[in-house]
Each structure stands twice: as C-alpha cells, then as structure tokens.
Image 1 (cartoon, rainbow, N blue to C red):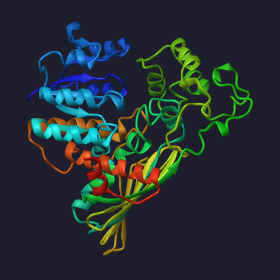
Image 2 (cartoon, one colour):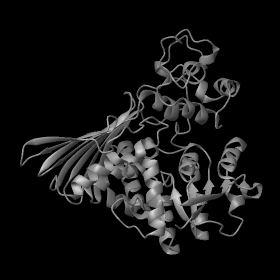
Image 3 (cartoon, rainbow, N blue to C red):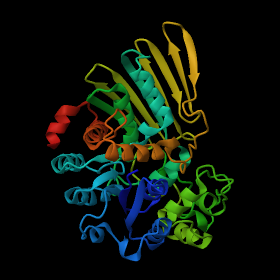
Image 4 (cartoon, rainbow, N blue to C red):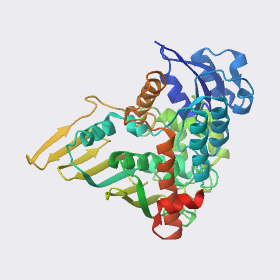
Length: 429
C-alpha cells in the first residue's frame, strides 16, 4: 500500500478532523502550519511531527521545497486563496476546504492554475461522500427515477449553530468571511447540481437578516451575557449557559466543538472559556453582535437540461437537511437527520424505505458530516493512487462552476433580479 505524505495548513476544527482520519498506513502527516500554539502542538503530538516541521504559518512552510504529496488547506475562508495558489505552484495536490475562495475570480484562478500545473484538487463538498447522498445519487444513476425534473432541498442550519457560527462566530461577516450562501450552503448548491447532473443556467434568490439584530434585543439586556442578563434563564442563546455552565451530556450541539471553536483552543479550560465570553463576540448578546449575513434565504435554479430546483436555508429549526427529488419514473424523499430515504415507484405504486448507512450516523456539528469527512478522505486516496475518476469526485473544475452558481444567486438576492449564470461568469472573466 502506498503511503501519501500530507502537510496541514490550518489546524482548526476542519484541519483536525481530516488529519484525525489520516492515522492509518495510507497517510502520513509530516508537517503543520498553524499560528495558534495549542492547535499546532495538538497536531504535532497526534502525528509525531518533529519540531523543525512545525511552522507558524503557511508562508514559512512553503519557503521549503515541496515536502509532501498533499497539502490540506483548512484556514479561514478569506485565507484559502494565497496558500492554495502557492501550493499549486509548488506541485502539491490539494484537499481544499470549502468555499474554495471568497470571490468568483479567485475560484476561477485556482481552477485554472491547477489545470496548468497538472495538480489534482478535491474541494471539501463532503456531503457527496455521505451514505445518505451517495444512496440518492446511486438511485438516480440506476435510472430508478427516470429523468430528474425537479428537486427541492432544505438546509436547516439550526438555531444554535446559526448563533454560534454566523452571528457570534468566524462567519458572521460577509466582508471578513463570505456570504452565507457560500460559507454555509455551497455544500448544498453542489449537491443539487451533482444530483441533477447539468449546468446551472439561471439563478434567482431572496433572503435577509431578519431576527439577530439590535432591534430585537431586550431593552435591559447587557452587551455581554456574563454581565448578568435578566433574561438569562429564558434566553435560548445565553452564552454562559451554552459555553460555560454546560457538560458534554447536556449540550445539544457538540460541547467540545462549541468550546474549541470559540476559544481557538483544543479542550480549553473553564477559565479560558470565561475570558472569551468577557472579551469576544462569543460572549455578546446574540442581538448585539456585528453580524450581517442572512438568517434565511431561498434560491431557485434552472438547469441546461430543463430541470429546476429550489433551495431553502433557514436558521430557525433544530438542524438537519431534507430533500425531495422528482423524476419521470418515481420520487425520492430523504431526511438526513433520521438517515432515511423513501422511494416511491410510479410503475408498482410501491413505497420503499431505505436506511443507507444501515447504522447510526452521528449528525451533530462535531460528527463528521454524517460520514462525509471520512468518505472524502477515502476518495482522495483512491483519486491520487488509483486514478479514480468516478461520479463522486468534487474536483476543482466542477466545484468552481458550482461556486459561481452560489455567487450568481447572491447577486440575484442583492440586485433583485434573475441572473443568467453564463452572463455572470463572462462578466467576471
């Protein structure tokens, strides 16, 4: 078995997730670049990396000649482009966290340079690799549905996930990160295109930030929850309750993940969490943050083959995804949270319920995207060692096109018009 060597750029939650999977003989993590010592030390100790292969940043690492087969780019959204372009120029194959880049031109640049240099890039659209969406794709490829005519897909972000990541957290600002459709839902735009298997031609979208605003803050609420809010006992978003006065058993959305990402540390102490709650947005009243990304959005898409799709992203739910795919021979309804797919066959008028994983899959925020994180690592190995070129590849060329669909939809929302995707692409180029 060939062992692929790996360098990790960005040792936050996503970088840790992928490299935690890479502990068998297929991979060897040989270097890490991460400015936060606690995270860098975690990767160093996990993979027995020598001191001289631990770097404060990607610039320092890439001053060296190419030292591995793969570079994982899992920095913050606005920090993908430069290390990705440098890694490509040095000849690294990439596992590139989504979104590939925060602007359409940068996405195109990455795809074009990868083609020019002959390197392979998988973008982390990990939903493709889950047992759930894999089974839906298999049913379509087996012609169970006939021609796919229309599709509806919903991403239920979850009220706590929205507050943690998109109100208080790293993705609260379009300028500092990217728009919500790109930051959170380029997963979903990719899934829609992948299942329909045609180029998107038109996009139309509506949405807004409607609830997590200063207008909705109680008049007597302090700026920071820890300063003694009179509504602490009844507020769903009380930061003290979510981050400090909680245990792994009673936290509904991943205790370690919430605390780790809030502090930028691995397994922080209560004292370290309290400091964050007093000094950063993670401790602020959820209605008084500097957030500007939407908390609900709908997107309508038309495809070259005549199929249509609708997508709904909303924060106000417990979380999960569900999908309905309608074809000329049958219909699929899938509930990812319950890991069930129901197929109705027009010919037999029979309904079949499928459990694609045949086992419980952790759907929590820390649960590896329902098996997708492990799935993409498995596919990456096959892609680079066996030349796998099947339907599951989220390679950079198609990913860049799907990113452009997300950008076009966001342009539609901002400009209140239907956007022709090819015209939009031409305007960017």
